[in-house]
Length: 178
Picture (cartoon, rainbow, N blue to C red):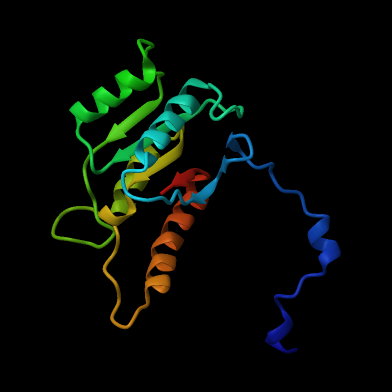
């Protein structure tokens, strides 16, 4: 028997498999896995994702789409507590911050450095400690990138880093927005 064909599955068998329904945190916009939010510098991406987290944590609509109330973690790697407070006051307009919205500011790179944990180790520890968190926002990707491997092209470097987050999202069944 040749090992070359052991991974072939009949399409009929695949069609008869049962899978869990996708968890949509914002209807038809954000689900489990890795989502990339790209745009020009200072175009409002941080405001967008903070409003997204507030909406999801509060179970409120986002962009006129239903959201599923769940806990969110916003990794604000370019902000501090004062800036977060200013932005939250503007967005909330006197309302309370919903429970289940967490913010962190520490930068943990993807590469191992000195005695500091890697970003993935840090995220895993926090997700184990807070299993109700289902949406994680990393703002911004450039702050945590791994070092490029000699001879590695830009696409391969991006793919390698994002694949690491995809594995984490699958392991914890969460949505990661970068």
